[in-house]
Length: 266
Image (tube, rainbow, N blue to C red; front, top):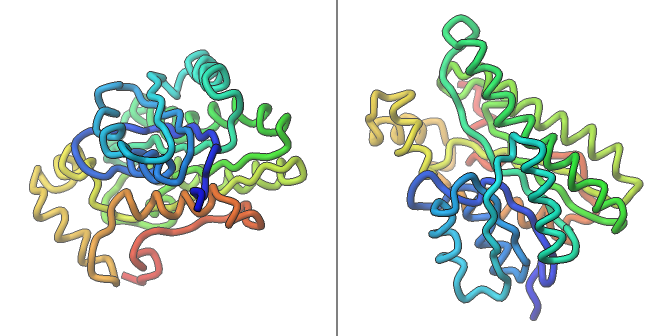
């Protein structure tokens, strides 16, 4: 039996991790490779992708790492051309880059606000800008953008720029989905909740809990009706579905991966 993405070429941004474990981009690369895809794995750090490549060993697909700053248009353009030179086409684009900064409009500087927009939103625009023409030329393609439940509701901390950009990713995806549907390109969004990814230990505990990882995990877990915390593999499975032919009649929508957190009233 062939894999669900056998022979497909996928660009996945944010393919590395800030530490060991299952981040969204890393898990997506591994799941895609397991399903037979040729993955063009993109990150700012090649060493951050070492574990990604190691975890995918033995898969029927392959992972090609590539260094790229997805907030820089020339860098993105070169990355897309490099993928085409390596694999000849682009069937799937997964935007998995993202990161939060604490603070509301008074506490947050304009510089931080602008950097959040560039990192979380402009990166999605730039990759879509340079990948879409090739998908249109092929007559098919699937784009899956990664948002966050912070783009839907309050999630326990003031992070106004992050929340705003992640909400924007959802609406951006809807608009692009309608624009390109008649040309064979589907665009959807995955909305992860408060998962246990390497970002918790590396950044979020310091931002929100004074470095108390255990305390932060406990407070996040209390918000999840299912009673356990998912990780990047849960996000990756949703991305895999949306990228595959199983979702051929699905575009312009979202899958929320949060254990029921976003539907709670508290």
